[in-house]
Length: 320
View 1 (tube, one colour):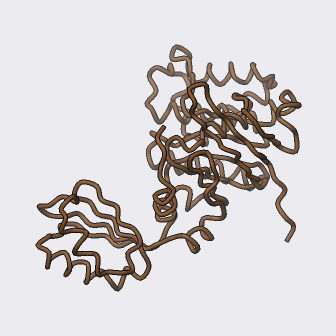
View 2 (view 1 turned 180 degrees about the vertical axis):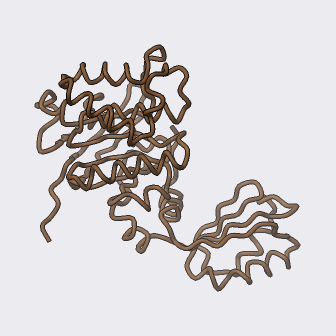
């Protein structure tokens, strides 16, 4: 198999802010071209900082960044038309219409009138914005604003899309529409880097997953490979009439040696480990013997969320 050439490569990438926060800490990473890559991580892990540096909106403290084979520090103009960036919080003018916003952006980037008309019509149709183009942005819902913001990055048909949580605040149907559009662009040979907090989206739609924490790379690989290597079964419980700070809870589960991690929140309990399917009845009996009733139960097969919970929980999630 021919190796996939990197669309992005960062070497020793670090970013420190004036307040002393170190957002990226010597990050080394290569991302394959023609793929949809999902970037995951807790708040403060460096996801948005990485995207802003790749987009040329932020200068690194140290390290080297190559995009599409070009050094971003030496060839920013050459990359401008080849990279589309959609920030997490877009600066849309509320007084402009959706159509006016797209036309202004197209003119700003030198699109011809024919390319502008064709691109806007196609994107508006694909993203379900056609009925809303004549309305002012101030009247858009949160999901509509997100779709309009994403369309600005897609309008130029760049070689590389950089999207920071574009599906946040969008309804499930809108999320599916956007993911299908990104997968289509990938099938056409373009590359997509998308920051997302939705594990199900990343597992179902991404070709490659990068998990960051505290500005460093924890793991990367295809969703399936990460699940096979790091995923764990989960039992999710809701206690009846007791909270998870009840000392009887941990004591009652101690004999179940295959439990690797226990997450407690309010009355909700998440148990992670291997072979939990055959332990389900034992979990109930141990809790009942300790006088703890269960009002809700769910068993989950290993998935990307279990990879995230296990590795980020072990590494320690950092604050924004």
